[in-house]
Amino acid sequence: MIPELHIGRDGAARADAPWADDRQASPRLKLVLLGLALFAAAILFAASNDRLPRFVESWSADPAQTAKAAKQQAIARLITETETDAIVPTAEGADAVARNALLPVSTLPVEAARPFLMPTISLAQATNAQRCLTQAIYYEAATESDAGKAAVAQVILNRMKHPAYPNTVCGVIYQGSARPGCQFSFACDGSMRRPPVPALWRRSAEIARAALSGHVEASVGMATHYHANYVLPRWAPKLTKIEQIGAHIFYRWPGSWGKPRAFSDAYAGAEYIPAFSQLYQGGIASAEALPGEAIAIAGAPPPRDPTDHRADNDVGGRVDVTKGWVPNIPDPTQSKARFDSLTGQQGATAAPDPQPGP
Image 1 (cartoon, one colour):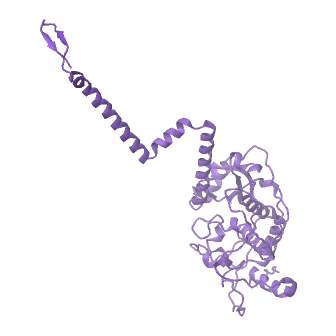
Image 2 (cartoon, helix red, strand yellow):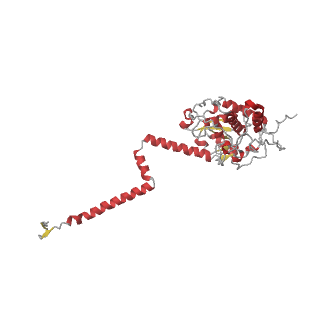
């Protein structure tokens, strides 16, 4: 190749070498390569930190879907708060009573829940559901009015139909009972060490049977939460306050999660009561009786049926059959008296009804 001659500004003739353009292009090439390297490094860094996918997703996502996902995350955080912060109240005692009174009651109409009718399940499962609900009503609201007892039962049935909770009666009541902060305090604070008062237990059982047979406590609507007025949980201001019955204040989920259409889960039907030894026992029941209760006097226990596998201190139920125990529940058509005897013992070796004074 013959170099071309060019006359420069100084009048001198110069020949351009074939590599002259390469020398001029070299800085540009370096810049391009550097840019590519930086871009590759940025991709690797973003991918390792999950930032690029989030950026691409936020840039291309449907705004409606993004809003829906944000709502679901907010609900999940609220569920976690109501489960973990229940044991750390914001206030207690007289201060809590005063501050609870200041929380506004919803002005929206209270929408009653649909009746729940216990479907046909095995006798053992139905007995467990009845026993669990009776336990919850008694240990949570033994000295409350019938409306207060029925409201506690309604909360449990509402939860059972809601996607945030288990889909059985016993599952709702004993949710989290193996750890501190269980959903119903009696299941893990030692309350069941205290034998029930027969008259109050029987009334609790009647309320439970009515609830499982379609009775609806309309005053609390779609309530899924309640607490005593002498405590103020951290979650209380974040839920929708509905009603106060006796010492209990009732709440529903805010927004669409507190509407009837959200309570659409089907009843699962697998009912069992955990063994007492499987419950969290971080608290011990007080030796002082509740108002209207009699203190049980310890006596010699009756002879143990060797085929009865209940725990010694199991007040209201049988052991968890999934752990290998086989409950001894005879066929009632063959031995109804024996069945009544066994299940009756679960209700209590309780103190007799207090006799009225002179």
